Image (cartoon, rainbow, N blue to C red):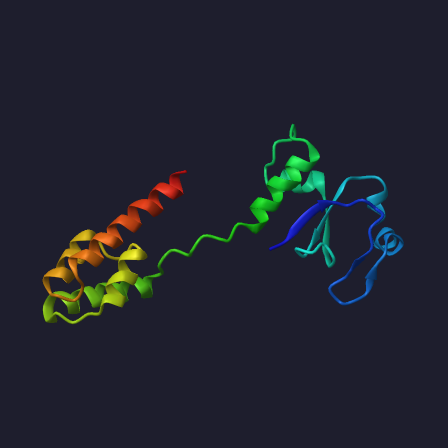
Length: 160
């Protein structure tokens, strides 16, 4: 997790390479800090200076309301930067594999609970496929109900 704070031109940090980031060395490397508001990107302890970013540029980049106070804008940018990227959508190979697994389940009754749960969680199998897995006794009806409940809860969280 990264931490963003307003650069105060007085604190001494450490650069990732181990060199000291004194206010003088930061000013030498980033002369604009003397005239503009910058954000310091650090580790959680606030010791290692990973980057200095212009607050105005970051507001524009992340579409942050220009009417927000500096600290509120910095906090909003920090939340955005620390939000994990969404899980990638299934690619063609994963969709083909899921279709073949469903075909094996349908025709031969071959499958495992792990495969059923993973394909449903990734959106590759429908509720009808879950019902087929119960019918073929690959997974229990109780587990299926738990999967469906979890899917509904995740969808509600996504809308919130």
